[in-house]
Image (cartoon, rainbow, N blue to C red; front, top):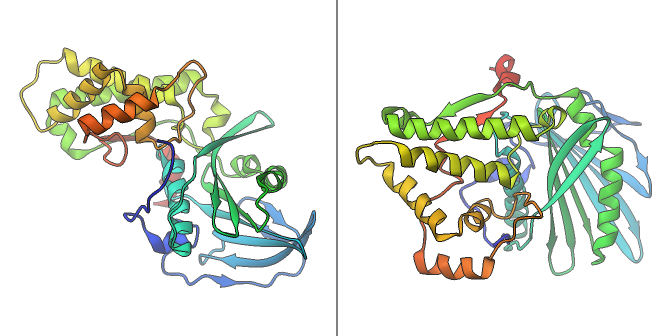
Length: 342
């Protein structure tokens, strides 16, 4: 658990290879810029030279140049280091988008390299001027190349760093990553393109036909919203609806199951979903199951210890089919930020 060792074939490869979720019609093109290149909607500036690196290329992925990738190269006889910074607009403010985009980015690397990827997601926290951003990172090792991927959701934009080197010393790449966060900061983007807070709730149409299921789902929605309101700083929420906290997901599932258990309901097609989750909770492996479903991307508090060895034995024996990720009965987000875009 926590290892990504598969290709995620259900994703949209065309947009992923470009490192974007934007236009799939526009043909990417390189542009020539004398002097600093300014990404106008975020005000991030890319100089010709930075630290030991020289700007190598600027690629535009959409018509209005809001989706860009800027590459830098440091070259010497013993070591090559290259990094590309991608800034690109998001399509919505829905929860889980950073997790989904992180795996999209991994899939893009796997598709281009035609190799399986094994990496453990790590969390990256950035604080500046009262703002807080929580991102995901991973280290991908090929035969003669090591790549560090770092992704942040920054309000209406994603910011991604891809740093590669033929030097297998991870500390070298980590040092570059830390400097990039300082120079091309996700918080500077959040300040320019924040999300407007005020939750919007999207309920799957089938849920509304069953009053008992709807009541349980709404209980989960309100529990999640309450946890986020009470535990996440408002300036952190400017970057996106929080979805990487384990306690948030656990209290949501518990509240939903508690409400379901108190309801009188006829047998419906939703019974199996709730009954299977209840069985998992009764088994004592709900914590492990939640972390497994989110593939190691949740931030686990220090007081929670997972029994992964026995969980894997239990999972092989029971083969649970219920899902928390990918088959959503509801989604919460800050969609008011996108009303003028539709």
